[in-house]
Image (tube, rainbow, N blue to C red; front, top):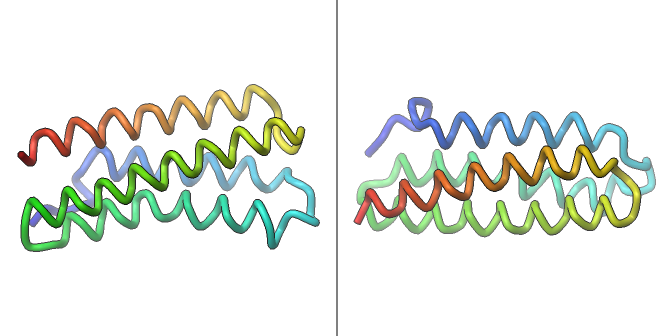
Length: 116
């Protein structure tokens, strides 16, 4: 349906993943298979679902995958907030990632509306 690499939301989501990966490098080693693993999975899920939806055959399917991407964005926000509360990452890092998440969610909602 769409070439996902040309979608601004996909590029923004890829930037979000890069930012997340740079921050989680600083998290405690004992979280490698816990919170860090979960953060990696849900952050990667965001651009992955955008790409998968763009490759589907209908607007309805695309919207479904955008909805999943939005859920993963909310999941990431929760895990980043928790990481901040546990003092695994600095408040400034939390704010930066949450701002990127907010941008992705706004772009997601706009794109979903345009597919109606």
